Length: 78
Ligand SMILES: [Zn+2]
Image (tube, rainbow, N blue to C red; front, side, top):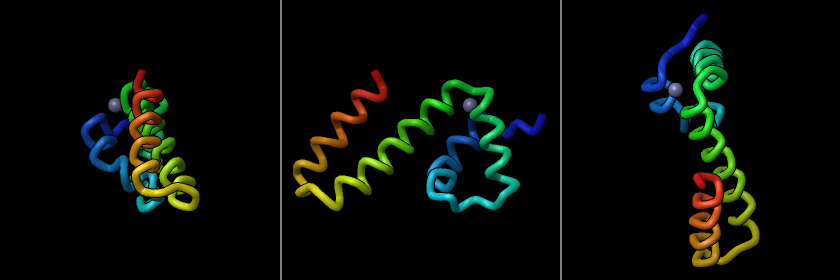
């Protein structure tokens, strides 16, 4: 067991989502996500948002983008 705890997992979440962590930190956070529904949920929101932003940036005007992202947040969090 190599659990880093919620505090570190959430602090590093953004780096985790952008693949900016070293392997050791990445593995620790992944391990934590596997056992922690809260952090896993946060990660899922983050992944969904990252993908939505990347997709929307190519296709959508800024105002639409903002509305779309708010809708996605509400959907994922509900
Ligand atoms: Zn956690």
